Length: 92
Image 1 (cartoon, one colour):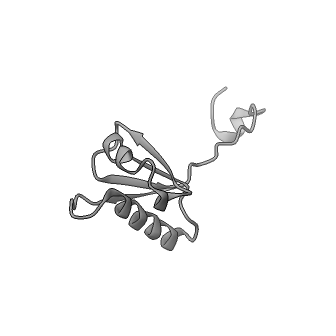
Image 2: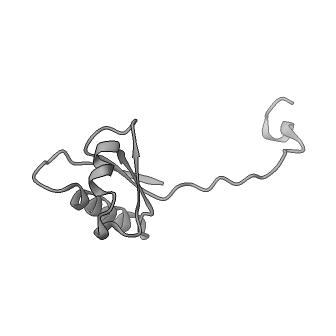
């Protein structure tokens, strides 16, 4: 689950924006985020910021500048093959 945060205000450093987004995530979901997806340029600015210890910063090309998605990656469980697909309303 991720929380989206947009803050184009250039008066504040990127690390401050990520911390603010992380604080809001913690407030809303009761647990701190483990990851932050952001634009490659924003990620470069905070790559070694000690105030963001515990949050993995991942720079990706598909997130626009000044946008921060903080949260926890969903765990996908492999439940194995479905014995009776018809029970799910799925044709075999």
